[in-house]
Image 1 (spheres, rainbow, N blue to C red):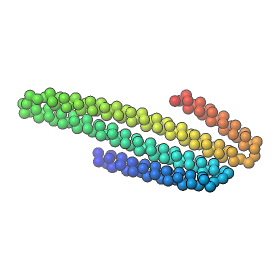
Image 2: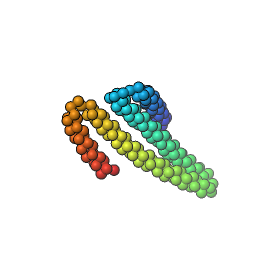
Image 3: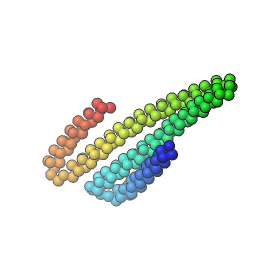
Image 4: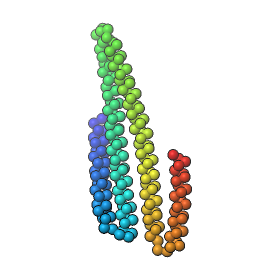
Length: 182
């Protein structure tokens, strides 16, 4: 169990590093953007967008790990309450003490805590799936942005326009597919 907590702490630490690194990179790029001109503006905007996505990913990992910690704490607490209650029940039974109601009450509290823990795990799982879907959509948007940027840099105007139309049609078809999946 100690290894799980160490691993979780390492993941949280790495996610914090990644988030801070992305924020610093974004700050540096914004400073460069102030003096940029022409096509350089689009390139820097694209890099800022990538930094935003890196920062979002790190933030999502942090929230997921914190949610997982809460779920684990709740599950372990419920399990310990049940174990203590069963221990008291066995002790009361062996000692001939007529106080089983408190042991049963403790077991019921432990079961309720386990039920709450199960709800937390369910919400954690659902949230993680939704964040992953959002990340996939952001990645798709980033790819589309990059494709438009590269296409707009084509020298031949007729080829550029044809490629932009083709790209637009593909993006619209993809968006329709995403809406059906949602």
